[in-house]
Image 1 (cartoon, rainbow, N blue to C red):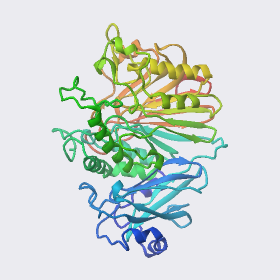
Image 2 (cartoon, helix red, strand yellow):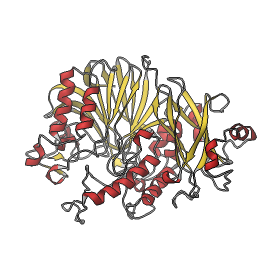
Image 3 (spheres, rainbow, N blue to C red):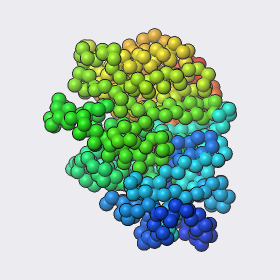
Image 4 (tube, helix red, strand yellow):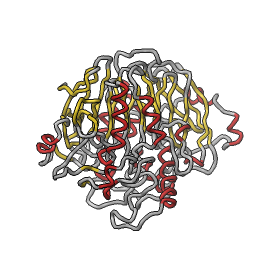
Length: 527
């Protein structure tokens, strides 16, 4: 662990940097807006129980996040009044050289969450930041800006992680991510929370029944955010957040709830009713993520797909594979294809997002083109004749996958990387058009879960047959953990990091696989 990471992990939630010098420096930041907020607020409790976070790195700035919540598991506990929150960005963790500062309002309409879009910073370097409300001072977080648009960085380091079911185990993997040195970003592919009611016999327990209202979702996010390892990871690195299904409801698809009358034995949910749940879920997700105002939901609609550029080395397209997809064919599940499976009009991204992405999958925009998305794009044929496919993944939408990959092939794109998750196990393989035949068009890394699924195992009994049936698949592991990448102009090195157990705390960091992809050659090579 480097010294800065150690410093962040040792930060206390209470009493951090409450010295007179820090308070005096921030006291000067009293905004005109304070006249319309709560004048001279005074609080006796810790306001920053949910920590701090940053994300969405651009060359000249980042988004800083916090949420005022003295009673985090009871709606937050704040008065229904806008509260001014001062913020500072500095060039070192001691916060001596201030690079930017200002004041934002923590508004009750957003659960007193704060999203500060900082600009005017220098590209490609670390910064440190903190907040103050009244006399309460937050922990110090570390972030990093993206490289300058025309720069070719010597390297970029980033991680992918997600699927963190609170009840299934401890978030030890987030502690190891917090300790990873010099990450340019962490891509969170989704399932940040799980929406279900508590279940017995688990290492930990959810704090409420199944989620439906905005307060329900807020309190569940607060429970997850209170985990010290997750808080440490947010404080240590900038995030690129996305969402999958459990931020709303398991296996939802577009306007359709999984409870559509054909699955799970529950009453059908009309789309207009399900939209109310989506609205509450999206607002809570926005409130708890370091996102820009462009991602502020408008009722049940949200624009979560967006792009980032890390110099001339890496272009990142963050996708939304839930909001615009057609309903899963063949009744969902892992089943043999039915007639509806081959629908040429089936959508995974929706027309607008698909057209936007097609314009980005072009050679020359950056050395590497990275799709940061939710569910595996790799074809995974399970046993049976015809083979069974998972209808909730890209395998359930072959026409949509064919359009995406055919467009990339026609454009001559060779250096395509795809990151995904969702399936609670780690996979790696080469991407081919539809039937896993012909030349490789890119490579995909499917990260395992942080905790979902419990301790797991090294392999499954079906693993040898699965890999033999799918020769484009090169790796499988069923432990919990995350995936770590280092991109350079000529190659990308990737490692699958695991922990042996999540049902007990403190598991060590272990590597389970390492691969290399060389520029211009979309093939997985041993690392």
